[in-house]
Image (cartoon, rainbow, N blue to C red):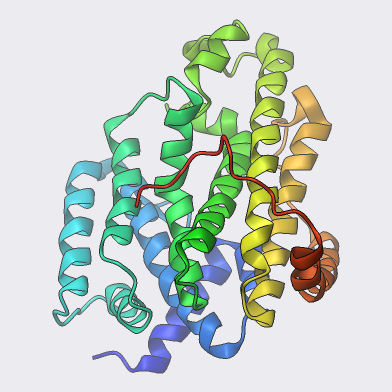
Length: 313
């Protein structure tokens, strides 16, 4: 069986190549939490890539012969075997097995993530904002919940706030990648909002719709901001190093959304990302947020979750 240190190193390589933004924030965790975060991320990244026929988010040579339905079924089988404690030859699933055992991650959560990937495989349509939020929970909110459990959270109310942060991240991703996703046949913006803006699913990428699309995306980012604000309650209840890492990730992703909003109709001329200087500033500001979070939590009114989407229990 692969040596334990090899699993962590493999997972670290995957996160560094697959998500520079999350990798930067993950370095701020204490060593034990960071190792578990790497192990969980490696499995999430592997599942995502298996469904899309990619490697670390990029097209692979095998994409042409890719069968998403078969891949999804295989992921379900291997995930179930890992959760049942069976010996795993694949190091990614061996890593996943270790982290779910160590942190007592409920069985339903990994399968909720796979259910989210199944929505992509089936070509699900998102008629309302509630439909979009359901998708966001399944591909990101539940990851926030699993990450919170790695950080020691067991309070269901705080896990709700971890889900909120995952929802905010995914709403930001949707806003940034809307035209690229549309080219791949995936439209996550609520069809109702698009219809109100006079945009059909078939013409979402047309240049003539850019101003209207920017308005719809601004509306989505306003919604994301509500989830970012709600999630700050959860951050205050994390250990210090975890507060620092999560507060930094929040700042990095929220800045991506703000830049999309600032660019307006030109938001999709080039992919919005954060540079090294911006990440460094986020690390510094995130450290301040981490130090002040408990004080702010005691002195400020708790942001309400009224009207926000509630994760399944």
